[in-house]
Amino acid sequence: MPEVKRTKLFYHLKKWLEKAVMDYRMIEEGDRVLVGVSGGADSLALLDLLNTPMVFVPEFSLVAVYVDPGFEPDSAGYDRLERYLKTEGYDYVLEKTDIGPLSHSDYNKKNPCFLCSRLRRKRLFEIAGEKGCNRVALAHHQDDLIETLLINMFYGREISTMMPDQPIFGGSMHIIRPLAYLREELIKKYSREREFPIIESSCPTGPVSRRRYIKDLLNQLERDNKDIRANLFKAMSHVKMDYLPVLPALRQPVSGKREMALTDCGMDR
Image 1 (cartoon, rainbow, N blue to C red):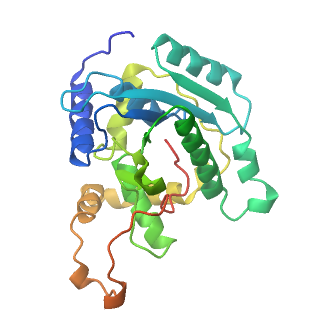
Image 2: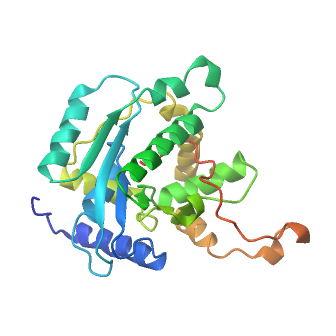
Image 3: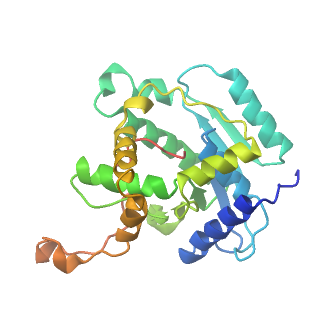
């Protein structure tokens, strides 16, 4: 495996990735981690960072998995990604599907992003089982958690977001999000620094999705309050239930049984 360039940004990202992993006990000794790779900057940065020596995280193994949604033929991007994974010495699985066109077909016009994300994630779980993985690492970062909170409030009528460590299938597998403490802009900067072979998304819904709307709204609010995203992220850890109009009979702890929140795309970034 070629040596990773040790820059100041690299050490910053590693520090906060390892802190998230340790805070939520995302990875235990001997775990096998499937890293969901979308071909985008975030997932390739996550794969790269997890594949470098850890200071505080126990020994584990990983496999990179790319589930091609099949929107448009991009053999050049697909081949470039495979060459990169092979050159870097990864154990990997690349699979072409028709999930994207199916999710955007006429019979599913209402919420194509949800179905596309769900089907791709289902396939990731299946491959995880085939490869003996008990952790599925997705590249959702701090901005994604904040945006999902607002998406679920605005459209799902609930206060919830993605969990950094989410047990599924009775706890036999976990979805983990090691980038949960990291801002999107720094991850993108690192991806440019490392010159990852990015596959541009050709999803027709991406430019007009709910997530895009929320991202633009936050950008607008940030012009007046530069701390808006940081404040929203911190607010998720400072929930005062006594000051929310919740009926006593409904004050129940989160069960962790749901597979995912209403994330509206962004399956593995």
